Image (cartoon, rainbow, N blue to C red; front, side, top):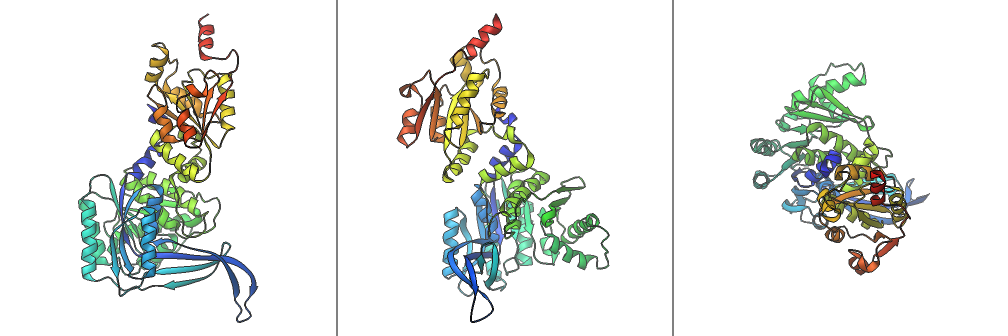
Length: 498
């Protein structure tokens, strides 16, 4: 079957997108003003920023939710916002992203936490914070616990995130209520801690402090510890965090040195090197890692695999300005680049391919589609495929399944299985993605993928090409490529027989 060919990351992505995640924590509205600096103020020794653009994104625990939503996952956000203009803006962004806000608390006595960053290019000039760290009331704890209870009762794969930014939502009592609730229902809990009171996180499945936070914990638990090497320090940090938090596993992010996981769900320790090729801004990279850990653990892809995927995702957002998220298409491209698994990952089911192409079209890329049996690949095929790629940015090749080929060509065909044909096709540099369809024609597949350009060989006319009418109707075009004389699978078969 087709899925044997693809690296498991394709399956993992689909599973992760189908996982529901409940994100509980401190909510922040991250606002940005960017501009140019060309002079110093005559009023004070500070730069004058000529404003060019301003925008707002979800921050804190809400950035975890934004990452899940942008990736295509399902997320419910629980926390506190104010009944103010920033709160309204916060909710509007959630709705635009598809984040479920039914578990939000709206408090008229406390403003929405906001961080305003003034930027000159990639350089942050100043940050202005507006916030309160008032502890939520017992009645608010009850409301959030009720929302968590309703969530764990939903069907399907689930995960729960605790994103503690120390702003008053993540009280010890509330955290223990939701952690015990999740454990009782076999829902994994992923925690991003800020408090040094690690007992409040007892029972969490994965706890993810960073290097600085880990060192603070080590100072408390082992005040006389002396560092002899970085590796020995990491070992000590992981052990101290596990012992003090009572977590099942620790995922320790080590900045540019990558990430290490240790605990009951891995053998010994596993380390993954940093994947960030260019660091523009580390804001929110930890939130991205938590989001992917949650989706991975909820989808049951395994602790080690979840950390690998989360590490790659965090590396991507480090290359973006400000608090950022990433799409499934961006992630898959980065995964291929990082792991070298480019050939298998070209072979995708139509559901995943539809998502990738939708993102590609939003980015202005032109999608080219062609189809066929491609039973024995020959020079005519290669020339046709290379010409097809020249019509756009992404070339999609749809292969007839084995059963479909038999219906079209007879019981003696295909000569090669669909898996082998797909693997050979994926090895071609001009081919970006391969998918297999079981119908006699690719009509329904074309309607789903919505290519900009439809290509067929010279033995067809536009009037006889399946899907041509529809492609032209939505503004695309149809290209007919002349056949190469003397090159066909049938002639090769006959020659082999003689």
